[in-house]
Each structure stands twice: as structure tokens, then as C-alpha cells.
Length: 105
Image (cartoon, rainbow, N blue to C red):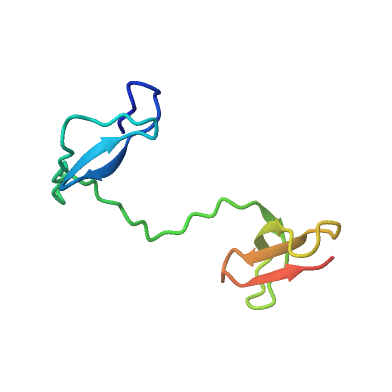
């Protein structure tokens, strides 16, 4: 980013005839023609993202019976699904089979 030496505002690109220059709303114009700067990055310069297949659960656990597999441990979280003056909804996810359900109690 370039800033105006007169008023310190941000300079923006403008056309001056067939040239592109940097100009400010206060009337300042740069004397140099704006030339695009290209930076070349190869794919080797960019770090690769490692994909992890294992899903890591960071949710708290509780005792709850799963209706699908009968397991008695589930992850849980709370979410505001209704109006702000209504209580939150408790969601549960079975630790074994990943079945998800709501707890309305």
C-alpha cells in the first residue's frame, strides 16, 4: 500500500491519459507510472496441508444410552435452537456408532 506524502491518505490507482498512476483525493499524483508487480510462487514454495483421517473429538462425555447400538457413553454439546428466552437444546452423539440425537429433558 502506498500513502499520500501530503495528507497520509491511501493512494489509489487512476488513469492519466494512457498511463496508470497513483493518486490521492487531495490532488496529489505520483510522478512514476504504476507498473504491475508479479510474484511467482511455485507449488513447491507452498506448504502442503496434511490430511488426517482420524476424527478427533474434543467434546465432553456423559452417560447416555444410544438407541441405535446400546452404548452408554456419548459426547454432548449445547446449542441455542429457539428464541433467546428459551432453554438451550442438548445434542448427544454416541461415542461408538456416531448416532446423533437431541435430549429434551
